[in-house]
Length: 149
Image 1: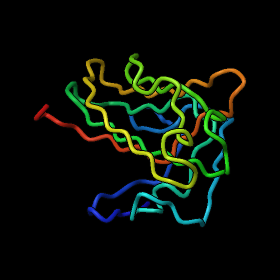
Image 2 (image 1 turned 45 degrees about the vertical axis):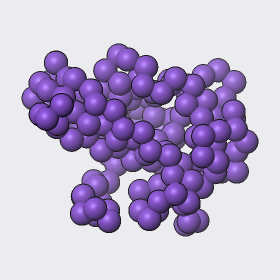
Image 3 (image 1 turned 120 degrees about the horizontal axis):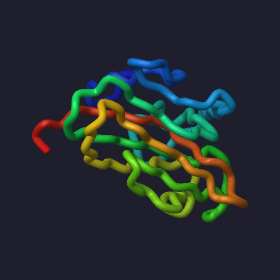
């Protein structure tokens, strides 16, 4: 767990259980670094990542609009175009052919925020590998109900 500079509490990553949240596949692993991350003062959010996630589920949510904050960083010296993958939220392409190294370089913060309606009580975030590329990664996910949207 981590409290960021805005005072928000981030929970440690975990496997999905019904009625809760987490990643769904058991074959993924975690990569960490102690190197500084440019573009942020909350380095800790970006210094570990889930590798090869297939999906994160957030279960038991009231229907409504949610702010989905995705955080990425490339934690190896990878050239742009080395790691391309699609991020699909609630069945819609949110980040097609996402390439963190191409957008911000390596060891740099890459943040994307989306407002997503949930109508079935479960928020689904899928990470789809593209053939011939390094597998997907994600460093942090924050989901907040936003009735104002």
